[in-house]
Amino acid sequence: MAGLGGIGGFGGLGGMNSQAQQQQEQMRLMEMMQEMQVADSLRMYNELVQRCFGHCVENFRSRKLDGKEEACIVRCCQKFLKFTQRATQRFQEHQQEMAEEAAKAQQNK
Amino acid sequence: MNMPQGQGNLDAMKAEMIFVADLFNKMSEMCFKKCVPRFHDGDLNTGEPVVCADRCVGKYVEATNKVGEVMQQLQQGQAPQ
Image (tube, rainbow over all chains, first blue to last red; front, top):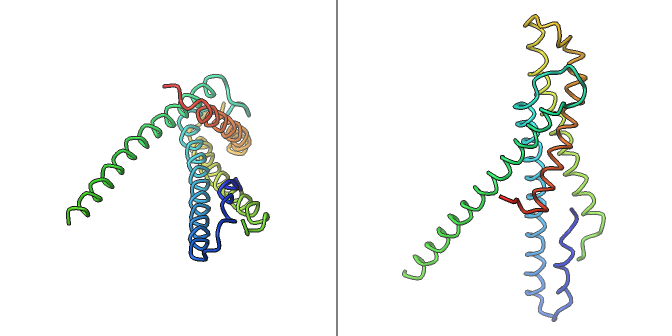
């Protein structure tokens, strides 16, 4: 999770202060983004457990999941994740289109 | 990187704390929902809410591990559709 070590590679280049500052700024931004991403995926993890547990587990005669419940949770999880993946793809395409349109509109002005 | 090594660990610990607290809150909310209404429905098989809570926690933790496994599998295999 501490990741991002690879980006530190170009820290020693040149003496230009503003460039170094820019790089530092960018690094901090990347770190912040990564932190947000980690927090978000953990939140999603928890929500997924809650959703699938609520859907799949109905009896409490045992302390362990039975075969049916486990299979249900796996399917629930897979379905949700695949669905999310697809939605992410479509959303990204949409965002890209919007960005391109905005860029075009700027150029035409 | 001029950030001290400790900062990354601290962030990771913070993320984990938030995760565990969230897990606990969602679990107790869910197990309350699942176990307490049963107290009123006259079903003797399911036992008291206290017993149900014990079992619910066990199952919830197991479910959390299972979901983690599936998430990892899908991430590594990049979702065979």
